[in-house]
View (cartoon, rainbow, N blue to C red):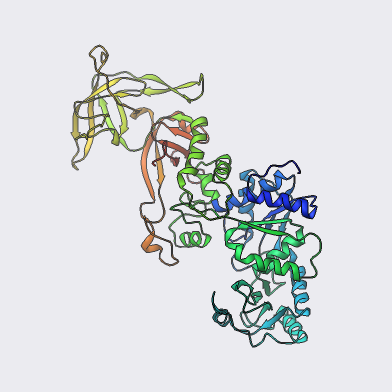
Length: 541
């Protein structure tokens, strides 16, 4: 570890601790609360926790911070574990904060005996009202000076279930005039008569996160508690518990904060996700419009692309807004290198080739970025589909695709001319009658545009889905406001067509000229295939 060159301020701090405290092993932890799925913000924290420990030849534990039984479940535990494995990380040991409840309870007793904790009868609203402000001190609870014996008896009665929810709390006795509001006699235990998904009904009092977290870190032997910047103001409280709980022995963990991940135009909040799911705006935690790892996996992002993204944005001390095109670039670069090329028409327009009656094979490269890449055949016939956007009835300047009496090259095949536009009864274009120009070169016809196509009789009908921001542009999430701020066009679904060869492929594919897509593992089935856009071909910015 002496020869390690630090690449960020966290690693620099660890090197200093190794020298000063003579640490022999670096231990980090990833401590999610099992009340939802892993999202892209968690991915950054996971990478920092695991990769930092790995660099110092240490290890990372996975700990479920299951201290709020009202929202947690085994289902979320399994989902979190699957996501971490999918990212490519292995934890040393799996822990649950609830396994430490006896130890945490004993630490609370220890604080009471030291005169550093007391049972309070104030309601949550009263405690909040007496907390004070950044400039004004708080008011002490009238129950703050209860005797040690009375506090021990009341806390024991809380544990025994003799009081109702919210009737009493256990608070640390620190300083109601402290400039850091978190230090103003914080609640460390509350009463909740709720069954715990692992502990059942063994407990009716549960420790607060700020109390359980440092004690759990210390109990596990964590050397460095790496967390996002919103916990910076909680660090003095973290250290206070570590320093004042006499049951803690050994190396004391150090909390270091880093900037959390904020992506422009993306809300990263489990409360937001829960509300979207509960109200039916999305179809679950893996809905492709959510920034969860399950969503990214479903729509074709790879673990390596997520990890590369976390590497590119780096580790910073101050919050900033990351642009989404950085994440998109990571998967786009990978897929450009690796993805199979196939032909699909997303928004079809029929064309008839009036001077052609054959069916022949046109060879398409599986991946032109690979030297000597194999090719596969695509059927060409007189009845074709092209993209609607590749034809314009009244062309704008610099539109180089198909127009009335205009020419375009069909990819890998022929130059054609649009001879007739046939309108339907609804006033929209029904189809185009076109002709092949077999001697286009001799005639000096050199179209500037090339478009893709599919044979109508040699293609399979599919559904394609393209995704956009869940919130209307400029809107900010507020609980209870979804009806007003959700974008009704966040998913665009179209009946499309694809070459049969593509339906036999697994994983990501590039629909030539259109984007990268993947078959939906959740909804797709033979005869009713659904394909999701992973990312566009080019960055719109």
